[in-house]
Amino acid sequence: MEFIQEYLPMLLQGSGETLYMTAMSTVLAYAFGLPLGVLVILTRKDGLAPSPKLNAVLEWIINIGRSIPFLILMIALFPVTRLIVGKAYGPNAAVVALVIGAIPFVARMVEGSLEEIDHGVIEASQTMGASNWEIITKVYLPESLPSLVRGLSISTITLIGYSSMGGAVGAGGLGDIAIRYGYHRYEYTVMIVTILLLILIVQIIQCAFNALAKKIDKRIIK
Image (cartoon, helix red, strand yellow):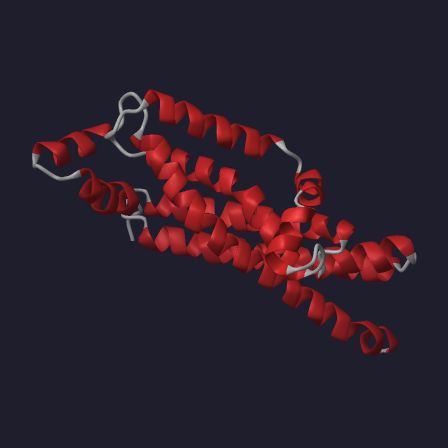
């Protein structure tokens, strides 16, 4: 009872901050990462709009972005974060680094989902006179939607992990609580509770997205 009275408000606030950082960064990362992933597919040699040079640049950007460890990226982005949100710590500041770190990851997930589409479907659409935009919006995205949803769950869960790591440099959320109380103050009960809360959040997200993907997957016989 004493533990609940002392730590419950803080844990609830930390959970809320973790969910806020994850939700905001996921939405913004997909706002940039989804078009980037589509553009990579389109500009391939066998794509709808072949452009080897542009494709090489995009691949380079994505590969470099995915190569930088998140904690190092977050620290390196402190000047940019201060410029955007006015400070380098807290949930809003963490969102900036989370979005920049997640965009290359999301782009690669989207690229993988679009690659699963049968090329014959694309060729049939071209034969019927569909424009590139129509193929993207009516073939690529709808046909790959179940895979995109599963990729979204992976991206969201990855961002939960990133947000927790950000607690090491004052990002807030459950990761910050675990480090400040569980590590620095040796309050191991607090650390265990934060771990359990993170596991619970991840499991809820995973189950929700899996159920959604199965519901919209036309290949699954109901």
